[in-house]
Length: 452
Image 1 (cartoon, rainbow, N blue to C red):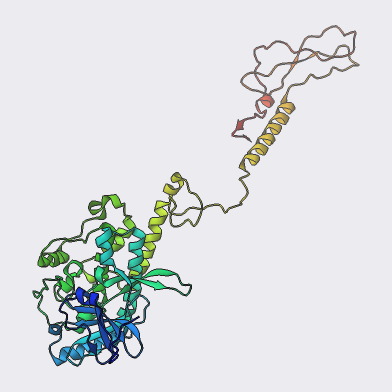
Image 2: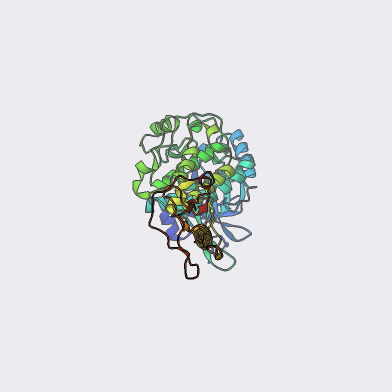
C-alpha cells in the first residue's frame, strides 16, 4: 500500500528509499503532473531510473530521466521526442514497453516504461561468470526476436550490452512465474544525436554512444550504422555468456575499440577449454563478430535461423546421430560412412537373408546330387540268348577325364551257368586313349553354389 499525505493526498517517499539515494532532488517530484517519483532503482551514463506511480491509472511504472547535459538544445529535444514516439510503437513481448514520454516542467526528458522485476544479464554474469549453453542461447534467441521487430521499423539500438538485456519475472495465466528476456533502452543513443566526438568517453560507464566492450567496428569508427551493428553487439554478448568473458578485456576503452576494428577474437577452446562448446555454435558467434558488416547475417531473422540450425547440429553430434537421421541408434562406423543414413522404422520385420541362403544351399546340394547320380557309371547287362557274345567290362573313369564311360571288348569266355549278373569292376588301370566321342563328354564344376 502506497503512503500518502493525509492533508493533500500526495504520495510520500519512504525513509529507506531516501537513504538509498541521499540528496537526490528528484525523489518526491511529480513529472508532467502524472508520474510521482518514489524510489531510485538504478542509474547509468544516460540518466537515472525511478520507480514512480502513474496517475490517474494508479500503476507503478519505471521512469527514466535523461541527464540534462544529454539534451541541451531544441533540436536534440525534438529528435528525442520523435524517436521516443517511434519506440513506443514496438510491441514485441521481448522489448520493454514504453507507456509515455515527454518533458517535465523543469526541462527533464523522460520515458515511462513498464516496471520490471528480476535482474539484468550483466548482474547474472557478475554472479555466475558464465551462463549454461542452453540459457545463453535462449537469451540470444529472445533478443533476436526483439531486434527483428525494431530493425524492421528502422530502429537501431546502438548500445546493446548485458545490462540492457533483462531477465523479467512474468506471471502467466496459470499463476506461474517464469523469466522472459526483454531488451531495454532501444534507440536511446540515436535519439540523442550522432554529433558527439569519439574521444568523449564517459569515465563512469566507458561509453561513446555504446559500450566499447560490446561496440561494433563501424560504430567505433563513427561510420553509418544499420541493424547489423546490433548483431555484432549481440555476438559479443553471446561470446561473453558462453566463455565467461568478452572477446577483448583491455582496461583502456580506446584500445578495446581498436581491437574491435582490427583483432580477431580468440577461439572458444582457448578462452574456455573446460566449457567444451560446440564448433557449430562457435561458427555462428564468429560470423556475427565479422569485422565487415557484409560478412555478418543480413538480419536478426537470418541470425536466428543460423543459431537454431547450429544448436540442432551440435545436439545431433553430441548424441552420436547426424542431422539427416530423425530417430534411431546409429553405430559409430555407420555414422562415419556418410551424411545420409537409412534407419529401419520401429517394428520392421527382421532380415530374411539367412533363410534365402539356406534355401539356395539346399537347391545346390540337390542339383549336385542329381548330377552325380546321373553320371555315376552303371554295369551293362549281357545278352541272355547269345553264348558267344563278348563279355562287357566297365572301365573306371580316367583321372584326367571324369565321368567318361568307355566300352572295351574282351576275349570270349565260357558261357555262364547262372543268370546274368553285373560284372565287378576291375581295379583302376591306365586309361586307354579316349575316343573322339569320349573326349566330348561333359564335365561338371561347382563355383560359389552355382553349377556351370
